[in-house]
Image 1: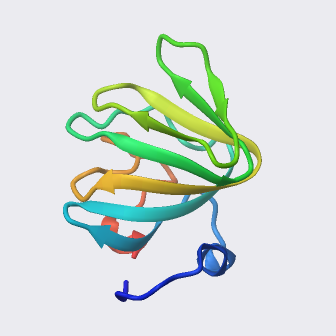
Image 2: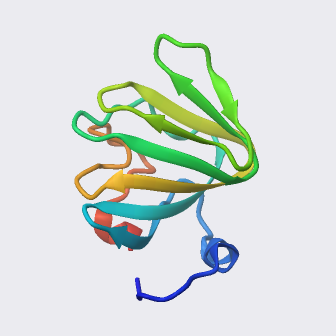
Image 3: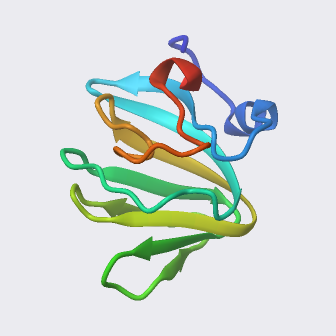
Length: 123
């Protein structure tokens, strides 16, 4: 995480696994992460004390929020999930995401699943 410019497309080209966020930088108390997703392996989860920003860099992301009608984020759109809101995301085709999360946030909340990664695994 050098203090230099980065090409998002170069970083994304190095991401091989779906549902495996990669930390590309830190801004104060938040991580800036990139992830590729395809499929529906993200479990329903919450972040009790943190908001989470999703930005669709490429492709379309289906966002599901408990108690609301699901919707899509198209390329270039973002959505902020407020703390304590149960949610999950998925995508039929490959989707590239930029995520902004507090350093304290676990990417699948308190839910353990096969895609759950520690912060060290996201570096």
